[in-house]
Length: 110
Image (cartoon, rainbow, N blue to C red):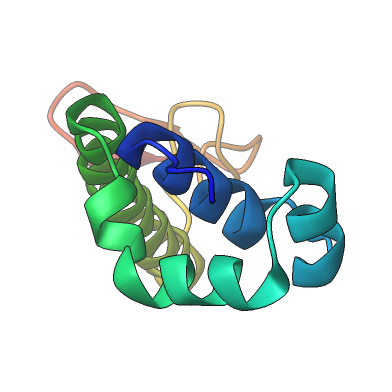
């Protein structure tokens, strides 16, 4: 009987969980039994296989997702505010037409 290293077992579990292949195919490709692979999968939980850099990436990814959600919500609020507020009329707006001009003191001249 061959004694497999812990590293080999963990790699076999990672392949079985992430490859999308059936476990019997993964087991036969690695030269181990299907029941052995099943035992290793139950022994090594996926959280045990996550290394420190992957955990950092997962935390960063979650932080960015949260930030993205907040920014989308803020954008929607601003869109709705713009839609609900009356248009701003400047010097070239419709209230400054040929009918009258604004005098320096703010009164309308005819």
